[in-house]
Image (tube, rainbow, N blue to C red; front, top):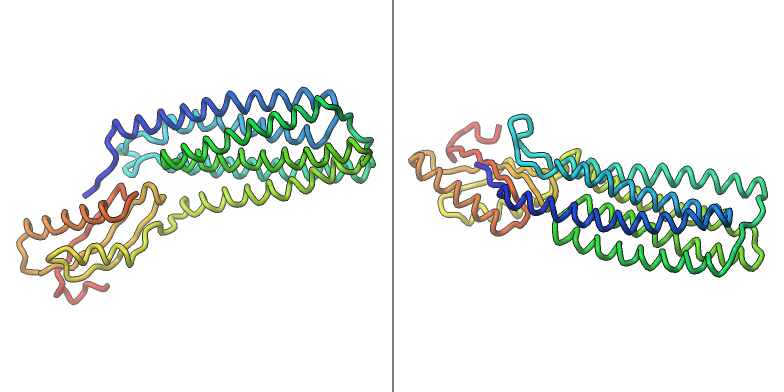
Length: 302
């Protein structure tokens, strides 16, 4: 037995997620343009790195618009469990891209320190660019995180975390830019290295959360499942409880031990009641598979 979102609900959710990504893409593109133009003029390594990070944000949005076009497609013969893991794969890709960028930025910053590069140009325009893009990123991160929770979207949540890393980057850029303004030539590369530590931590968090889904980590408490199932009249015991997917889209299977002499229709009705109770008591379950066994079967635990 399986219960899934209706085709209409899946379509509306997919459209809503892509709509959010499109709005965020426009803002990220504007932020990238502002940082890149000033980085070229000033020669600041920190701002250039920050601009590349914003470009990664925009690239992630483009990838998301393409991937999520297919992620909420209904199950088919070749993909009986649906296509939702495409969203998880894309979210993992964001984490990897952030990690790679962090390594690249770290190398550039170390080279700048070893070579003793001259301090970049600083001006009031630079402070305006940094402050303006920080405000835009704050709005984007909060909006995207809120919509991610509303839509139960792993991709939007990962992308919001990526945008949050931009806030840390830009704050660090502001600090190093200020120090450079007052004559500390080493502040630009050092500020970049400090920022990279925060970026790396965010990247690891994104990768870890989504890899756990890809390796089928349990997402539903088996004790809670057994507790709910045993409340249904006719259920004598529950075992072999397994789950996978995400907390917002969990796939569950379990074995029910019933009276061996119960008619098939009665056993089937009990299983339906168990499924309905599980979906009502444990939000996020989208698929339930139930195997029924006679309680007096001596091989029930094999």
